[in-house]
Image (cartoon, rainbow, N blue to C red; front, side):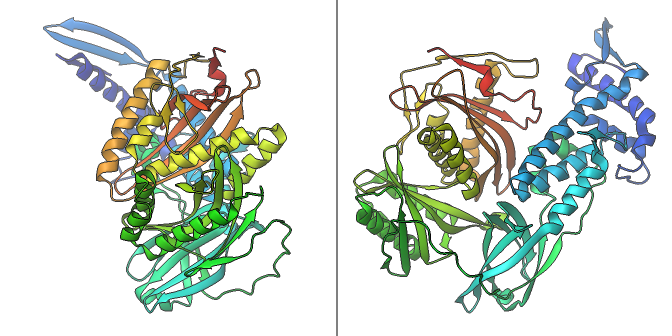
Length: 577
């Protein structure tokens, strides 16, 4: 491929485009089964596929540059024997995505598993090979097999229903697969007017039928696997979406809107269950696991908040919390920006000891995001000072994930540290859902940040660590700083203009550094959805518990990064202690 221009970059790009056209002619026959042909222009579509391979991928590209008559002439060439190597990096990406999907499937996180398997299938159709071996399995057959197996195994069972009004009906479904609760799944249905998207959490999904759909006796639900709105999460998937053939799967299930007879309830084994108390419509039953002496204060404050949220009385909220600007604003944002409503009015919840007080964990609510046509089941986590006074409200992580961290804490004898990390990440997630830019900015400050308490505080300690890239794929520290700055700038703009925002973690891991006491790495894939924008990235945090108060030193953000080798890890850092 060759081109000339007064601008070197223009000449470079045009020569590359011409080279791509030549490669397309060479490999086009291999793409007959995977390319979405338009008017029979196979070569043009293959060229579009090849453009999804970044210039950086063309490591075997040779370039000559000369100058003549005031123009830069660029000549690119690649040996025919090297063409096949162009696709190796794409295959590695598919392998990384499938490994992640398998891990999510094992964790019963079927929603994210389906998404990544499907994205893997699209990427696979951009490789000119019908046999792609990974872990001794052919991915061209294995990915469709896993997608079909997951979809077919999902079972819906109506647990309860409630008539909210003549034109509104609330349903609560139990979702399971192979006798196990599904921790996360997205599905949709047509209510006669709109498509309604629902997210199931920890084996349950709550949603409301509105209008004519309140009279439905059956519901046709479509299990979601094709995440069109999330295609930008992987740049290559977005580029290929309208070029390659996208596979389709039978994903519709008809479920009866009739409550199944409940199984015999298990006998309660927990001790220290408090007496039930009621304010307004709510009955609250607290499991006082850690023998809180201020249980009555906690109970009264919890019931008072639930009643205010249920009545959606903003003036009463302002009056009740007039002496606490932070809490007043937080509660109003939780209510208004997430449109919360309650699923159950009998509420059993745990009271746990925390680093600086108590928490009431797992009050189930239904969040509604109209512009996303999305309803999600969430947990409210209430935080109290030692004296039992409410000081913060956040959205919790999935319960099955929480229980995993509890078990890890028991095995490692460090639940106290892991609990601090879990609560911090719940606060971090709520920062998005309440659009608290000030807190997000503090979390990503250049200084160390103290992470306990309701407000993030900067510490005098700065950069008491050493970062070392372990291979050429990993970023340098300057890149990490740059992406963090860009990340904050973009979020500030999004918070101002988007009608609805939802944030979730598809993976979340806490690792302890064996060689350094009290040092932890938090790694997660963050999935972000808003009215007009979706994003995915890899977040890594370095936390130190050896100070008087736990602190974060490093916040690394790698947008749309999937290469396992390129991800920043705990092993990249050494603390100077």
